[in-house]
Amino acid sequence: MSHKLLAGKKGIIFGALDSQSIAWNTAQSIFNEGGEIVLTNAPVALRMGSIKDLASSINSPVIAADATSIDDLENLIDFAISHFGGKLDFVLHSIGMSVNLRKGKEYTDLNYDWMTKGWDISAVSFHKLLQTLYKKDAMNPWGSIVALSYIAAQRTFPNYNDMADNKAYLESIARSFGYFMGKDKKVRVNTISQSPTPTTAGQGVKGLDQFLKYAQKTSPLGNASAKECADYTVMMFSDYTRKVTLQNLYHDGGFSSVGVSQEVIDSIQEK
Ligand code: NAI
Image (cartoon, rainbow, N blue to C red; front, side):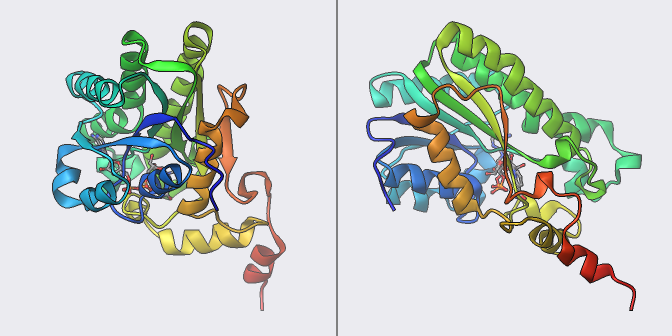
């Protein structure tokens, strides 16, 4: 399926680590829709992941950037503008990491240095990215910026640990900075709240397999895949969503509006 919805559009994709990554799938969908991309990831991810395979298949350069470093962000944005010969039309922030989650530290016993690091990577990096784009006037009018979130920002999921707080902060930054991006640059900023998805970051969450099944049973349309999230993001980068901004958009098969489904009731019925 290709409608060339993004023909002539150019942008930066953060966070493609391997073929399961939501960002990887998004880069492929954007390419199929005629968009041009600069790929970026943290230096360590460039060494350990397989981003170079993706880059060669979609004719994209890859620039290393730690999303918490203003110097790296400035260098990346300068490169992208000179590579494209003009400003950007879209940016995807597909970045998340909790050191506490990764190291199995419970929410009731957090290591605060790790919390600060995870918060900087998962949430504050979005502010740093938006501020750098804003100061450099790097976006074309009617451009679109998306970050990926999860419903633990609104509801309690005990195993999601401090990532829940990071996502709440990320969504708030999208609204707060999105106001100025809209007023001053005519650029929209939204978060997409995606179904649980089996990726490297997702697998850091304890009990992900059972949780995927629970979400699948709860969502009337079933869980949204990484590829389906990619297609939704294409729509958000297209000219068909020019007045959608400051929103947290659920892309979860209906999970966020369901109290309980019949399948879940049946699965816990006493025998
Ligand atoms: P992933 O592990 O493939 O992607 C996470 C990316 O963040 C990796 O490419 C990693 O290298 C990058 N990253 C980590 N630290 C960085 C830094 N300092 N600078 C630049 N990049 C850095 O996993 P996934 O699932 O594709 O994650 C993408 C986004 O989707 C994240 O924001 C995640 O929280 C969000 N999300 C994931 C869900 C899931 O169940 N997998 C559900 C809802 C949202």
